[in-house]
Image (cartoon, rainbow, N blue to C red; front, side):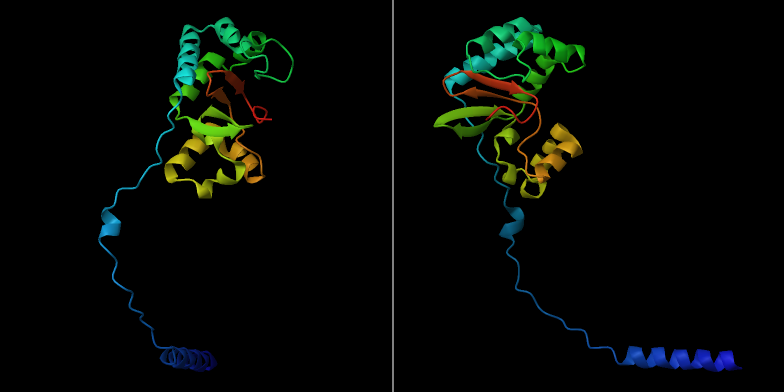
Amino acid sequence: MRFASFTALVAALLLAACSQAEPEVVVSLPPLSDERFTEVPVEPAPVEISKAAAKTRDALIHEATRGSLRGLAEIAARNPDFKSNVGGQSHDRFWDLLRRTGVDPNRKLRELFEQPAGLREIDGQRWYVWPDLAAKDAADLIPEKLTFQDRRRLEDLIREDGIARIRAGEGYPGMRTAISEDGTWIYFVLGQDGEE
C-alpha cells in the first residue's frame, strides 16, 4: 500500500510540474530573400602564371613524365639557391634516395602541377606555389577558415597529422614546389623549409 501511495504522490507532482510549464514563445522571423538560395557561389579567380613560369613548369613536367631525376636536377642547377633537401646532397641523389624509400619525386611533382597555383610575394618577388594551399599563411590554413572543397583537398594532401601541425601554428607542412615570376625554379620540398 505504501508503494501505491508513493507512486500516486510522484504522479501528482509530475502532473503539477507539467501544468506549470512556461508558455512557448514564438518569434516570427523576417522573410528570407529567395535570391539568396539561387545565387551561384563565386570561386576566387585562378592565378594566371607568367609565361616564363609556365615555360619552366612545362619543362619540369616534361622531365618528370620522362622519369628523369637528372633532367630535374639540371633545371634546379640553374638556381644556385634552389632548395630540395637539408642534407647537402646533390638534388638528383636526394631524389633518388626518396624514390628508393617509396616516394617518387617525378610522380609527386606531376601531382603538384595538377593542383591549382597559388601566389606569394617573397622579398618583392612573385612566386607561384603548387598546391595553392601552400601559398596561404598558417592562420588562413585552419580548416574552419577554408571552403568545404579546400578543406577536403587539404585533408587529402596532408592528412590529420599535417592538420594538427597547422593547428599548432606551422605553415603548410606538405610537399610543394614554387617557380618565380621570371621562371626560376625556387624549391621542391617535403616540409616547412622552402620559404625561409
